Length: 559
Figure 1 (cartoon, rainbow, N blue to C red):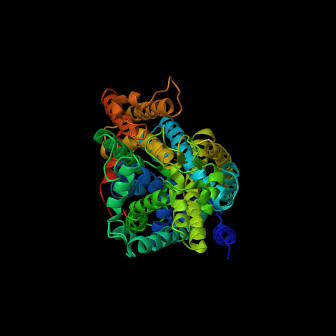
Figure 2 (figure 1 turned 90 degrees about the vertical axis):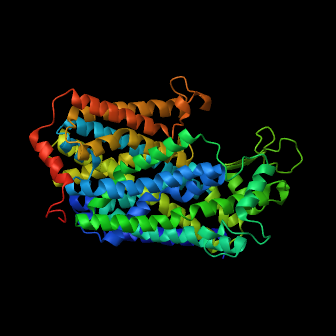
Figure 3 (figure 1 turned 90 degrees about the horizontal axis):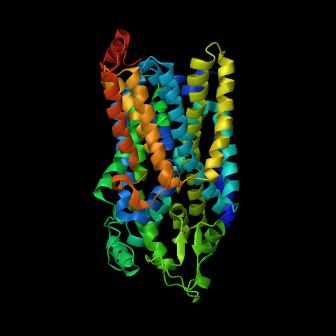
């Protein structure tokens, strides 16, 4: 069976499965639309959470970043895994006990203010739209290569599919669709990794394989370090980022994770608080399978790529090279006219430009794996991107319909009217997300990292102080969120989009990258929040009692 036919068949079957699940589990009430009727099993919720969590950034882009950055790419592994643990253990049980399934709802009630709620809605929309831009970009990358359409057309196709099951089924449809998507994406991620690990090291376990010796007796990491030094790149196992920037990026990713609204809502789809804790543990296990494999895939892909293209004749390149060239994500510029590909760390000499987002997807083709493995990977990549995009769409629609319209603009709206508003919000959201997917600020993982920075700058202090600091009042929370999000937006747009005079890497404040600046903005948020709350009136007595009730265990914890 040809590669193209295999791709159409496997992708078509997985899409049919997702659409079938959406129709079967369509939501008939706002409770089912927002939190799946709170009837999801902890294991199923763990799978859905893992699928929601492992977006296009994790599946497509993370290993690609690591393959280019080497040691420096570890910030994404440390930040995202650490952040999930922080969320699952520190915040989720308390938020689940409070009973508010959106971050704006928690902030609005905890800080007894519709102004706080409105600011939180604004922050949730900015975070979600930045995050979803990366997912739509990932969908476009996959479609552009495997369905042989341009990236923009790929984004439009993905928009249509996500919109269908997100609007039809809400959280109920999304949850059960994501269970299927997790199974598809993890199988698709592991099979090529196992194949290549056996091929390169004779070890079937990728996590061990990339630290093993190859068929020539040389350890893979030593071989890759040697190739890098030969070609003028920095050693793969040594980092070039400053320790300060590594720390701030890792912290921003961790803290941003704990404030991500689309992950927090996952803990409300189960019946009890204890089930929320169980599903968090299951999700961590399911996530670990992919995250421990990503460094291995990065090493395999990087080694195979250099061996395949460096100092080779352009006319002898395999078919995958030409196919990726057609997408515009791989470019060869023959500067010296000798038809030989000069892949070098020196930009004056280098003739090959490789988009980091293609490394995972191209890996099976570079390694010459069977067509069905390549097709499976395409299906898995789409599953990863679409699962997270759907979860983010729900956050956007619930923020607008439940937190803005129902609680502030039109409290008397009927349940049917609220459901219609949620679906219309999702429609608007997917159109805007499509635009950002076509015009992203950066490659997938970097775009997602910016979303984490925005979440850290805005939500994390308000959530943590709302749970653990009884004296925290509405004035402090509002001031902190506004200043935090505006500071992060300013820094992000200045250095990523060139606004406000722009600036190069040498102009970064304290040498901190835009991906790590969320930590700085978060610290400023904390300082402002606590300072303002200490100089204004304390929260009402009933709010203090409410905080005590959230923090202390009681007989109602399993409700």
